[in-house]
Length: 164
Image 1 (cartoon, rainbow, N blue to C red):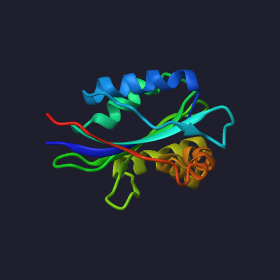
Image 2 (image 1 turned 180 degrees about the horizontal axis):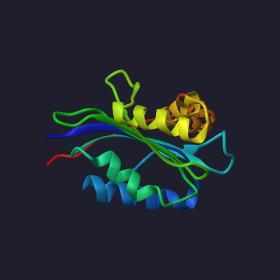
Image 3 (image 1 turned 90 degrees about the horizontal axis):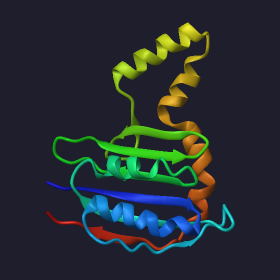
Image 4 (image 1 turned 60 degrees about the vertical axis):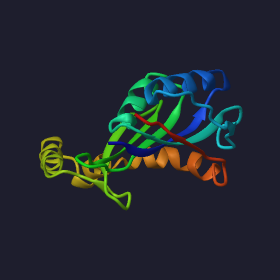
């Protein structure tokens, strides 16, 4: 059984690029060479995309490996596979990591238990439900990453297929 996904490194210092490739290669179990290009939204930074096929849970493993490197901005998606929901992880140095279950069309799915907790938190804090739902949908991460996504239009993509 395998899963498909994409790693979007929206911004990375050039010195970290070989280390990112090494970390991802260790997770997918094969050498990785990613086409790094300049990131106009962060002068001096680089960006890349890698489409991968590997075992389910690879997106989480990539996120765990890269999230501690606080100078990166990235997203990792993993499509659903038999017995596994799709997932999207986002990371920014300012916000940390966001995780969301995703549907086939890319919408964030919020489980009932998380919605109930959001309703309780908004009541307990005296804050609005809108703010809690915005947090569950990853709105702050989307707002921060959108300039980096737009600056990447037309960037090259590398495909990776791991077997085994």
